[in-house]
Image (cartoon, rainbow, N blue to C red; front, top):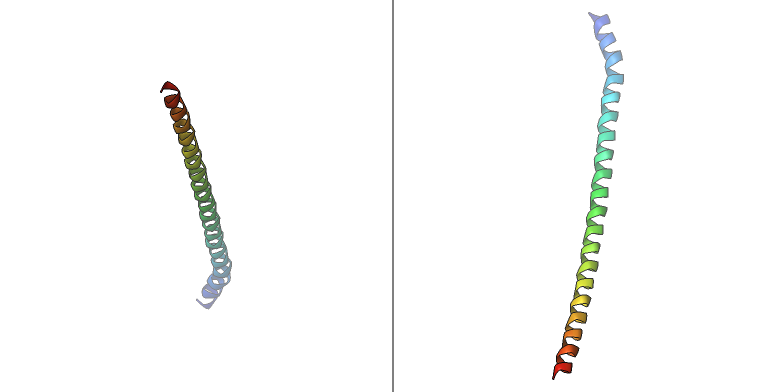
Length: 74
């Protein structure tokens, strides 16, 4: 009985180390994924702001052109 317990103890240590290492790697991968998603969201937000600014400029340009056309008609 003592021999069986000793064998179980000897083999359980590496198994626990392997399982722990696996969970650590999974946690690191999840952390990296979250960082990548955060960076992607920042880029999306920056792109949205740039597009919004571009649309404002185009709208202003259209209004200026419309005012010029309207003043020519009068």
